[in-house]
Length: 298
View 1 (spheres, rainbow, N blue to C red):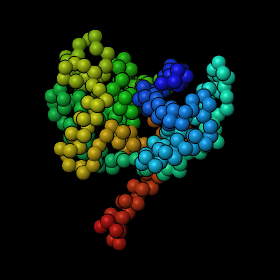
View 2 (spheres, helix red, strand yellow):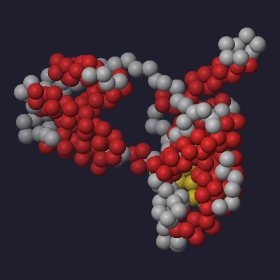
View 3 (cartoon, rainbow, N blue to C red):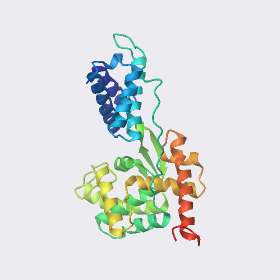
View 4 (cartoon, rainbow, N blue to C red):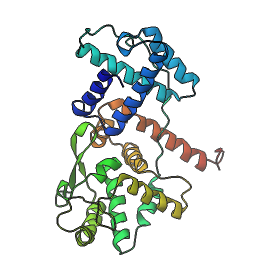
């Protein structure tokens, strides 16, 4: 890989604090960009706008989704902005991607659970052994806070204040925010802590652990949720992100201000949060179609 691409990726990780997965995705896109230019005998530092458009067209023809094409364009645009800000020995050159626009891409409505479905899923963890008590605390916390699965997996015992009913989480870009614990989440966590202490010991910092006393991974959390949904027969796959979507959808549906929901979710941009106003309209339409005597889904 071109040394200046490597420097840019290091900059994204160390200075911009992007997640390892995002940096990896950008690295793959830029490796494809470099390979595309190599076939034309060109270098990343002397590419043209026409070649950027050709790269985008090649990805469309290869069958990439609009979102993937736009992400690749974002990676290329970011690279040349980096070149402009930190010129190399040959100078900054021009920005060939500046005037290239992305593809129009509709944003799909996020998948979520209705309130009764969420209640049924949480109540499925009703046993008194290690796994059941842990899963109940995990489900309650996910729904109560709307946290990302990586944020929950990264929670330390010291991050949680049961007395105040809050927790401090570290989100994207290593930004910290405070989330709140409903009474049911506080009770479930209080019931979980003795099990956790017996399994993990005093030295383990993590709030959620597996049967071996190690930190419960994001993949482990996803597997637990999917298994519970399958056993219940909800008819839909339940990812950890579905809890986040449900949290936001239910708040908006009950009248919460979208900017408050933005703060609770840790979104940098209000436009990311506004999708939940559309989700709520879709939810109302589905209820109408099922309930109205002439509804199409009766």
